[in-house]
Image (cartoon, rainbow, N blue to C red; front, top):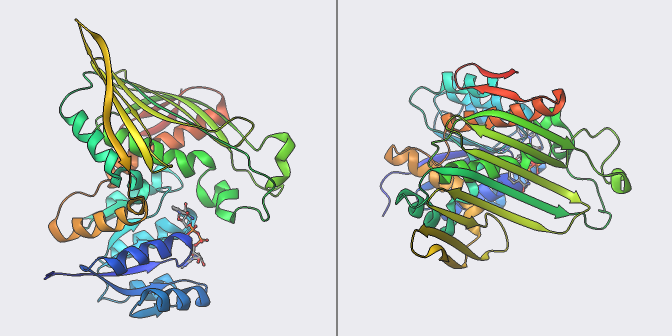
Length: 361
Ligand SMILES: NC(=O)c1ccc[n+]([C@@H]2O[C@H](COP(=O)([O-])OP(=O)(O)OC[C@H]3O[C@@H](n4cnc5c(N)ncnc54)[C@H](O)[C@@H]3O)[C@@H](O)[C@H]2O)c1
């Protein structure tokens, strides 16, 4: 029996907004108090499908409803911060979709406006999977020793010509803050930095980005400026290195690999699909050398990727705990993204200063 419920509003009734509504409907401590969308049909259909108590034609009217105490912002990145600031000014807890923001300045504005309210970010998604919990516990036991390298290498090969171009937010950095790096790299960085307990502060970033390769350049409309392939070398303050590569529409075979390598041990991980997976841990000792065994094996309940953020967010509101990714963590993620884009533009390394933000070298 749940004695306290969170009255939740969801702004944005598109693909991901509806996933949040499904999660809200299934959690008995959440009341879906209202949904809003500038597309009235989308709002009405979603409200009917998920049993929302009220439908609003825009974000402002939902934010003026004083009975709603928390909101999910499932709208594109370029309009999200302004809505979040308004929500915070109206005393509402906020769950932000990813990417966090367009740039670091927006995250700092949110931190300034937060006060005692809970703000969480959905880049945490893949850390709600069961294997991630086993990995986090293994790391907390001190099995890594000194963390040396966090590695992400994901290449998704191009499929056959798509019937329609991707949605606008995926095509324009002015809407999304970037292409594949903002879109999926933010999950990779949240996963690797979150599993290692948010102890790393990135300092130097050198990156390169590429757009759709020539043979399939017309998969996106000609005005798209989103990168589809990104690579970065990131050095943290304590010397830990993050090597990052993420590509979609690639002229390369499928590869998905994440690894955390320490001085005493390492983890060979798998953040995404397939949900049937094996997570390996390796430990080192002077007699037998490196020994690798299975840390976790099974078929994960992948619905946690969609429902995890809203469950974690509302529980944080109810019990006062910290969400999986809050604004301080989001600031580090945004600093990485900003530095990746800045370095790719300048062709030079970019220094991240923990208090002043990114600066050209
Ligand atoms: N599609 C996915 O699988 C997915 C997964 C995770 C995160 N996200 C993130 O969620 C965000 C939205 O993605 P999506 O796929 O749901 O997009 P979408 O286009 O399907 O939905 C966005 C919705 O927001 C509405 N909207 C736009 N401006 C608005 C405003 N000012 N006020 C109220 N509603 C407004 C649109 O009408 C639309 O219904 C993106 O930032 C994306 O990165 C998407």
